[in-house]
Amino acid sequence: MTEEARKRYAEKESRIRAAISLREGDRVPIQIGGNIFAVTEAGYSMAEVIYDETVEKAKNSVIRFLLTYDPDFSNALPELSGEGRAFEMLAPTFFEWAGRSGTKVGANSIQQFIEFPILLDEEFDKFFSDRTGWKLANSMTKLSPVCKPLESLSIPLSHRGGLQVLADEFSKPEMREMIQTFWTASDRYKEIRKRQRAAAAEIAELGYPEFGGGKAMVPFDEYSDTLRGTILSLTDLYDNLDVVERFIEEYQPAMIEAIKNFNRDGSKTGKFVHMTLHKGLDGFMSDEHYVKYYWRHLQEIIQTIVDQGMIPYVFCEGKYSTRLGHLRDIPRGKVIYKFEDTPMELAKKAVGEVACITGGFPNTLLEFGTPDKVADECKRMIDACAPGGGFIFQTKASLGISRRENVEAMFGTVKEYGKY
Image (cartoon, rainbow, N blue to C red; front, side, top):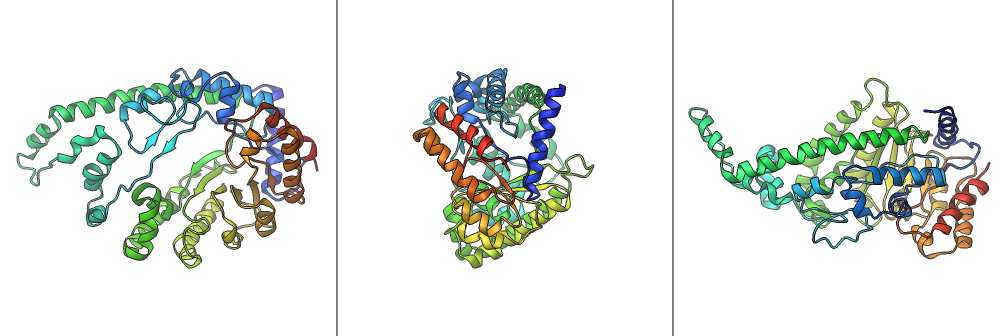
């Protein structure tokens, strides 16, 4: 890292640390992910970036965005950079991405998850009594047609003569094909990951702070997002409450133990542990259910992250206005809450005394607004959220299709008007 880059890093990190600890720095920090905007400004499409196995297009997009707009945080490579062909080999049924053959996702769109239940009612007993068997025969086969041979996998009860039977099972033509596909995809991924790491290292040399330290998940979100889907998970609070409770009792201790291992050697002290909250938003469950099956687990996870010397970075997706009172009960100056559709002035009033807040700036204004309207909204948010510190300027989501003059107005306004 050059001397100029080291100076840039120190200046930006100081600004960010001040905001997290609820102090006023020199100005409001800016955390903006370039994403689609960065890619298109560099002259590419998201589909091109996803299928460019050299990862050069993704790297060039990020570097150009950082050096042009100079945010206070680094940008990660766009998700799936270089992974298109390798991912196609695995043929996921729960995921769509730009450039995939036959996809409805546009060439300049982020990836899209397709939600459907993986765990069915009739599989509950097997899920809790034979997790490996359930994953092989029931779960993996729903997630990819590549795994279909696992449906009929038969493992003999006795070991006497069983090894030959097992060898025969895995030697079936369809099993050989599945295993070969996995080998090929894995080898391809190893090369892509190597290029992704090299690109990330080159970006890090520019001197933009990167705070990634791990990810955590609330048990109910894991239950809903990956197993039952939104509708079934919410009706399960009434129809299958014993299943919900049993899953949470199993998952929460494992999540807590995983967090305790994030920073054993102290190398990730001060880094962020990201959480995206999906099913705790306004209207998805009663406040009674929220406290019992969501908040108390989220609160324990937040405290455990803080105990490890790391920063919980909690993205409250959707509307979170009715939950703000609960979010206050955390260690002061140790947590970042990002909001999507919660009014930022309300968030500042409710949790601004205990946590750093971020998010809330409407991405639609960058696509359909004017530079004057963008500047006015930036100033309004700064007036409402910046006093006393504890505010990081950020859009609701990473940048999508946006007008360049509006993005320039946003950065220029925050850097000038956001001075303390």
